[in-house]
Image 1: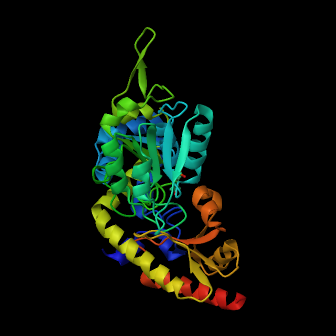
Image 2 (image 1 turned 30 degrees about the horizontal axis):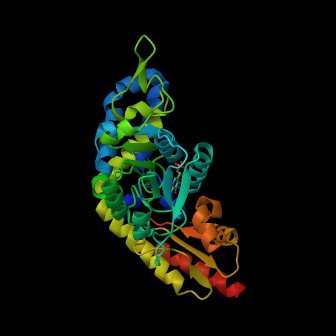
Length: 393
Ligand SMILES: *Cc1c(COP(=O)(O)O)cnc(C)c1O
């Protein structure tokens, strides 16, 4: 990978040390251009006319996303966020009193709230599967909990609040053997390292454009295995997703498009397409190796700083690194780094509520480098954190 060229093609690299790819990655010029070109075309031709002109490009976004996750183009649907994508799949399932839904401690806050809400509304039981001693989801415990009452396993691949990579292929083996649907939240993993729905064995997967994929804000996607479509009944039937049969019924659109609504930002769709294309061209395995190596370097160095406690869990870890710095509030650490041009973020406990409650976690400082980050960019913040830790010791 020509890191210098990739950085030169990323305007944000000139101004900041961007270690917030788990929040939103930096756009490349190529992605930015795909978006502005389309906006110019909309202004010049009209929005509908621009979409018609670019129809092939729009189709290619589905093809490329399918290639990225190892599915088929007809299994992909676009939304304005990962949360909407996840919700489209989840709310298409039916639950009754006595049914069980299994999730993990790393589950994302919005998913957790929806799971709790649905459990309360339907009388289904939500079970949070414990972690093993490494902090990843305990697959033996999960296998023991899957039974004839289990209607769904919903799990986050990588939590928003740490470097953990859950053993999702093992989870997939268990769910497939039991015939239980598996909804995977891959919002932090797609774009960061290879994610393959066949290898994992999930039935539904959601992701977002803006994080490690480096696409725009305001776009997300859902992948649904063709065979799983029959298990799902979209709660909303729209002009995009269905057609009236002229009588009392309707026919769903082919594949995952049945979940879509008619309106979507063309610039965001094509921006996502450009970002996905770029990831495919660079090679997600190469992206993953470099991102994980930078994450490991940052994690190891932070761990050596007196007063710093790294909070990442799991056996396999990725480019997300979380820590506390003595008793300093995470927001103060983030603000101090920002004054030195370093972008990091602060994880709120309610973003991973089950894990935060279990470990009594305060807000954490979250660093998330990516493949276009340099070694110097992960080392410099460690010196800044060390200076802060010394001052407050
Ligand atoms: C950010 C995040 C989401 C939500 O993504 P949106 O596109 O903001 O809806 C879901 N799950 C995880 C694990 C996340 O980190």
